Image 1: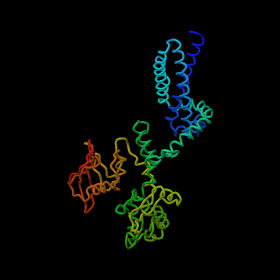
Image 2: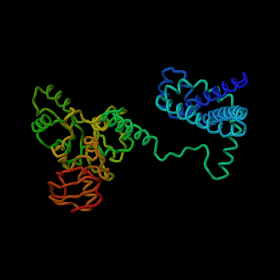
Image 3: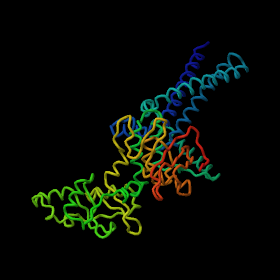
Image 4: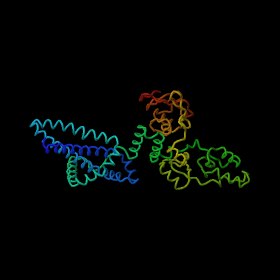
Amino acid sequence: MTIFDWLTVVAVVIFLLISAFYAASETALTASSRAAMTRLEKQGKRGAGIVNRLLAKRERLLGAILFANNLTNIAASTLATGLLLAFFGRVGVLYATLAMTVLIFVLAEVLPKTAAFNMPDRVALAVASPIEWTVRLFAPILRAVEWLVRLILRGVGLPVGKIHSILSPREELRGAVDLLHRAGVVEKLDRDMMGGVLDLRELTVSDVMVHRTKMVMINADDSPREIVDAVLAAAVSRLPVWRDSPDNILGVLHAKDLSRALHAAGGNADKVDVVALAAPPWFVPDTRPLYDQFKAFRDRKMPFALVVDEYGELEGLVTVKDIVAEIVGDISNEHEIALPGVLVLPDGSVNVDGAVPVRDLNRAMDWNIPEEATTIAGVVIHEARSIPEPGQSFTFHGFRFHVLRKTRNRITALRVTPLARKATTKAG
C-alpha cells in the first residue's frame, strides 16, 4: 500500500468518526429533557441555553445534522470504494458495499445512538456548541432545502409549521408525571400533589364543598347560652347564622369573636349579641372553578364562603382548606388510608360511605374509577340508572359495587372490590 492508500484509510476512519458524532448528537438533542435544559439555563449553564435555541428551530437542527451525517457517510463510502477497486478490480465495489454497510450501521449509527440515548442530557450539553456551528455553516443550504420541502408538503395538502397535539399541555404534563411515577422517579404523594394542582382549573367548587347536610349552623333565635354551647361543641371555627330558614343566612360567626365578646361581657352569654358579631356572608356559585375560587380567597383574605346553586339556594360551604386538601391530600402514615368514610378490609375490598368523593377514593386507593358523578354513590346510581336496594351488586369499570345500606333515596354505604379482570357487564 502506498502513502496515498494509507491516507485514504485514515480519511475513511475520520469520516466515520464524524458520522458517529452527528448520529449521537441527533439522538441526544431530540431525546434530551426540555424541562431539564430550561432549568439548567436558568442556573446559568451556557450549553443548556444553546440546546434550547437549537430545539426552538428543530427543523433546521435536524436538517443540518442529517446533511452533515449523509455527507460524511457518502464521502467515506466513496473513498472506500475507490480504494477497494484499486485492489480487487470490479468486485471491489461489492466488498466496499458490504464493508461500509457494516461499519456505518454498527460504528456510525447504532453504537453512538445507543450511547447517547442512555445519557441524552449530558451528551446534548457536550455537543451543543459544535452542532450550533454546524447549523450556522449550512444555513444557506438549509434555507433552500426548507423552502423546497415546504413547497412540496403544501402541494400535497400537509400543514407545515403547526404542531397538532392530541392532548392539552396540562394533560401532557400529567402524563409525564404518571410516566415518571411508574418508572419509580416520582413518589405517589408527589404525583398526587402535582395532579391536584393541574386539576384546579378543571374542578369546580361543588366538587370539594361541604354539603349543607353536613354543615354546622347556628339558629339566631336560639338562646345565647344554647348558641355558646353549640359553638364550643363544634369542630369548626366559623359557623353560618340563620333565622327562620337555613337558606336565610344572616352572617358567619367566628368562634374567636364570640370568645372575645364573652370575655368582655364577663362570661355572661345573655349580654352577647350573636347576630351583631357575625360577619357578612360571602356567597359563591357552585360552578366556579377551584382555581378562580382559590385566587378569590387570597384576594379577599377570607378563607370561608357559602355555596349556592343557580337558583340561589344554599348548597354547602367551601374553605381554603378544602382546596388545599385537593392538592396535598390528607396526612397519614404509610399503613393507613386517612380518608373519612373509607375502611380497607383484609381481602382488598373497601367499605365506603356513599358520600365519599370519587376523586378522593381514587387518590387514596390509587384506583381509576371514572368520575361520572361527584360521589361514589352517585357513580353507582349513574351506572345502574336507578336507586339500588341494599344487597344489590353491580360490576363495571373493573370494580364490583355491593350496596350495604340505604336511607330513603340515599345510598349510605357500599363495598367496592377491585376485580382482576375488567368486567363490562352489569349484574343486578
